[in-house]
Image (tube, rainbow, N blue to C red; front, side, top):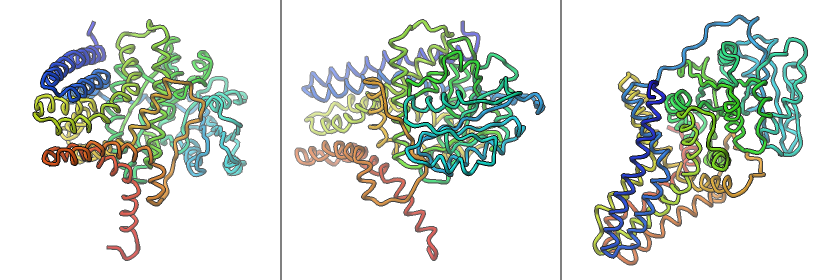
Length: 544
């Protein structure tokens, strides 16, 4: 039964999740009951709530704990070897679709040019830009490529079907002519780029296995120099893409991420095209293909070669990150709701089924984790007000709250892997950048929680746009733009103020615990504008 590494990994995932669900709540509830007997009923209730959020987060926690341990113990998973070189005559034609809505002109052009400049036979490449912007910006793209017969610009009115509606419209208008009977479809988001060699390698994979519905490529952050957020994301995402996603897609169920992927049209037609009822059309459609008996493949040939690894733009501002993560949370919750209501007996191997369940629970469990984060200051404030603080319960609560963000375990394991294999700077950079990512993730948390509620409560009918590009803006605009995150910061300060008034003698020992979360949230809100000002002052003529 455990004859493959993947099965052993997922057996360990289930065991760790089971231990987390049984042992942690058991100890927590015992300590909460002890506090209750001492009269600290509110304190015990908050401790029990912390335990509950930890239980609901168990699959996500177990996933990172096990994968991090496997990577640290085994030294990592081998990268996928590149396929042998294929002649130009044998390569299939490719139509790369670039959907967009209200995208910057430069971002769309960058994506198109990356396809046209790739190491692929020029006569076997077509590009479709399908745009449903509110203005006429699509016309500027059409005018730029009016003399390029390989580029087709399509405009549609309305937002019905979201991104999938754009893709399906483009597929319906693919009149390719002789020699294009057997072709592949590529996907890029506006601003993203295919590397010089990536399309050729992905197409060769499809030639080698005619039952492959899609081949999903590893990506790297393509705009690391834009802001402090993109710099941090480039370091942390590199580790997660290379190791965590690689383990997931190899030992679990491979999925489509909606970009930097080649898809077989026959598989797409068999599932009725891209799912226009879901924000996460990539996940929904990819899983539908697998359930129809098709296969998917994840490839990461050489993660440090920019001629092989494509570039993915990450939102450079906090607002962009909030919208992106909120959209992911809505899409993930929609899918979780669908599969909970649907047939549980999916025709998948047990390890792929387990991986699917874990992935679908990732965003829904973010909601109770966020509630636990909001309760933590109240919990500490209650401890400060208690005549006899139950120390054991206090430390247990802090430990369990830390375990709910199990990404740090994976990051620590990956950084140690870097360092022990000679990549010392990369390992140290990961240890430095991850805490910064945690800071600007705090004001993202309420948007993720709201996205979860949207996905569960009702069908979303608003086209979700992730802002690209950045600009320098004043502090007043930040206050208006981030009013939700700042309101959360104000809420977190209430327990600190209450303790300062009621028990000023006990305030000193709990000041750090009471103030650290709102202070870090405030820093996360203003991280980009503050670093922009510092950078501008350094670049100003005459500045030293």
